[in-house]
Structure formats: C-alpha cells, structure tokens
Image (cartoon, rainbow, N blue to C red; front, side, top):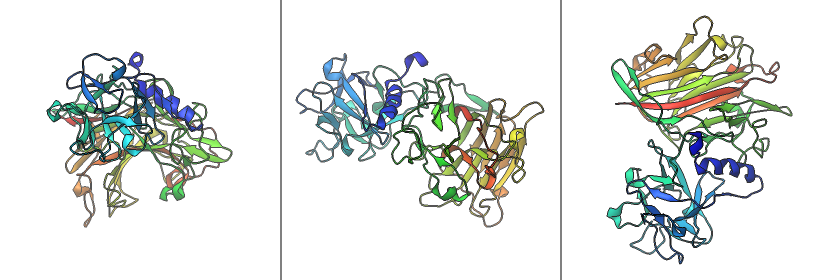
Length: 448
C-alpha cells in the first residue's frame, strides 16, 4: 500500500506545514478518471465548455492542479486554462450545476469535498449544494453536481492511483470478513493509518477544538486539530512534527493521540466522523494500545454519539462507549487491567448502564494492542474485547429503566480522544510525560 501513496495524502501533509504561512498546497499535474467508463475528465483552453469524462488518454486538457483548502475541501485548477472548476448553479439553464473551468479564483462553488468510497475511489461533493458530481453519460456526458448519493458514475480515480489507506483515508481491500454466530460481516469502511508520518486526514475526521468549558466533565485539556486547521486554538502547533503534535499519523501504521504539557497547558486530540461518515448497524471495532492509566490524569475513549445530536441533545441522542478507561484511583476505574463499555440514554444520563471487561492474567491495555468493538443490530448492542464471538456486555431496551427510550436504532458517528483530568481523569498533579494512545485501525463491517 505504501508504494501507491495517494497524491492527496502527500498534499495534505505538505499543506499543513504551509498553512501557517497562509498558502495552499498545490499539486503538480493530476488526472481525474471516471470509474464507470474509465475515461479521463477533460477541460478546454477557452473555459467555455463543460467538463466531460470522455477522453481515453490523458494530455494537457486532462490535467489539473489540486488545491488543498484550509477548510478541508479541495479546488481543481485546469492546467490548460489556469481556471478553477466551478459547479455554480448560477450558470444559465439548462446547465445548472454542470462543471466548467472558467473561474479565475476559487470561492464556495469551486470547493469540493473528497469522500472516500468503499472500493478505494473517491466521490466529489460540491460544498455549496452538498451534491455529488456525476459523470453519467445518460445525462449527456457533462459532469454535473446533482446526485444525493454516490454510486458508480459518481466515483473517480485521482492521478491514476486508487486512494490507499494512508493517513486514515482507508481501503478495506486487505481486510477479511468476520463471521459471528453464522452471520458474515463484510468490511465497508476501514481506516488503517498506513502511510508516511503526517497529520490525520481531514476528509475522514473532524477535530473538536479547545476546552469548551471542560466539555461538561471538568477536563483541563485543549484539543487541537492539525496545523492550519480552521479555528485551531492559539496554543496548538502551527507546523507539523511528531515531536510536538498532539494527534498524528506516526509512519508505522498508527493514529497517535499524545497528550502534551506545553508551558502549563495540556494539549490533546479528539477526532470524530460527524458530517463525514455515519454508521448504522454491523460491527464497529478499533485496535488500540492505551497509555498507562494506573495513576490519575488520563481518560482515553473510543465511543459514539447519535447523529441527531444537533436536534436531540445529549443524552437523549444516545452515547455508546465502546472503550473507556481511567485510573483505579478515580471512582474505581479499570486501569490497565480492563475496559468499561457503557450506554448513556435520556434517563440513565451520565451514569449510564454498562459493564467491565477484565483482561486475562498477563495481559493489559497498555502493553499490547487490543480490539474493542460492538456488534450492533436493531435493539441490541453486544460489546466485546479481542473476540467478536464472545461478548461481555449485551445492552437491549430491557436494560434501561422504566420511562427511558432506546436511542440506538438510528445512525451514529464515531469519536476517539484522550481527555486530561476531569470527572474520570482525576487529578493531573502527578501527570508527567504520559504515554500515547495508539490506534492501529478503525473498521466498520455490515452483515452480508
């Protein structure tokens, strides 16, 4: 996988380094190829014709510069004309939403989000109308941003390289199915974190920022995004280095969250897939090696929230903690010897309903990678550690107190973070040079 490193993974890492200087990462000539017909996307020198995916070979008309924008989107500049590609609905009818390279500067209509697809391609989602770009020949052959979902005609290969698993933009190509109790689960979304060292991929993850009044738990950390991330707190690094970043890809196949004390302020990372990818049913799992939580100070977690949280506030939206760990010195935490899985609902609130897993003798959360997961079906969540066939906690609507509502039959998004201090983190007075949380992979499987 490493030798097929995607252009965008490289560009993002470069872009974060340059972001502090208010410049954008720009690629050399790249090509865009429609997966459905294997043809290249063509622009014209005059910029008066719409983009089409009809060229069997690539020349100058099929080359683009990829501009990595600070908000996590990209813009496309046609090499032959120097103009940006636009999906502007203000173009004269009947050409609404058709792509044309005629803009000298890139604004909202010239920005697109790269959305990784399960087959390793990407879809282009226009930022302004939130619709996917299609190359469907049944529409006349012109590229047009008018599809609400991405299927074959909305999938593209960039620069003749299928998007790999570097930096969190994942492929499930080498991930095996899981069979549990006669049901086979097929991998659909896999973040393997291969690739060179650099910031995590903002096409996959959103970053919570700042302290947010302790996040309701009295936490002391300031959460950072990658260098140059919009609205990054002033305490966060402005250039990338694995020695200063609180969250990064380590170049050895891991996502790392490393809490750091910088002149008295604890910096850490909290990533989520909100607005990037929602999940509903199947198996969700992550392979994680935790920092040592024998003593107080750290509070690592891998968890989910209901995707309707903006309209149904916590806890009624539902929170499911797949992995949560804290010191035995704080409210009898599991520490390195175990894991807590808990669901939080409207009535159970912060206390939730959960159970503890204890590792076999000789094993610990901080000395090796362990797989923390949940098998999720309507009205049931089965939590496991290392073996999906053996759950240690099963939650159903009957697990809830009277008058409560089961909120887990709807889409969710994932989060992972290392909190510092707070309700379960405890005192940070003895916290010095803590170890990192390392994630080998995060995967989602659906029932076949």
